[in-house]
Amino acid sequence: MADDAKHAWSEVGNRFSSVGKRLADRYQATAHAGTAPSTEAPHKVEEVAREIGNQLERAVEALDETVRDPEARADLKIALGALGNAISVSVNEAAEAVKNRGSDT
Image (cartoon, rainbow, N blue to C red; front, side, top):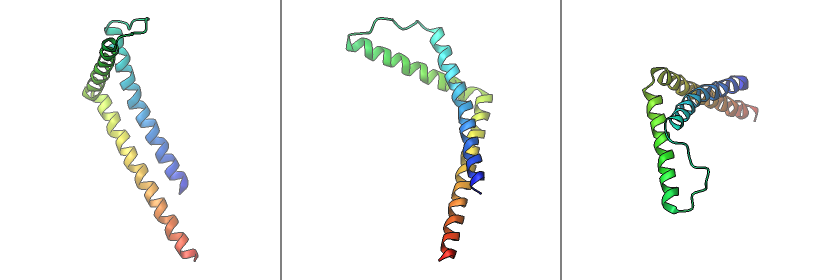
């Protein structure tokens, strides 16, 4: 039974990796569309805050585009299903282990 949980959690990792790759691809695509960051380290607080804001905006845009993509939504739905299955299998295995331990005494 432990192999079931291991397989289920492996599936969760695979599915979320797929979703994460889509998100990363969208995030990188927004980097090429905008201006390249300066090679000089910014010294002013305003410049740092602006850069943080720009990065956050890119991340939100990438997330927005990803969730609007039907394929990405399908991947996310499968990933969440795999997560639910892994939790269910793990809980069932834990309950079985507790039940077996109780019968040993």
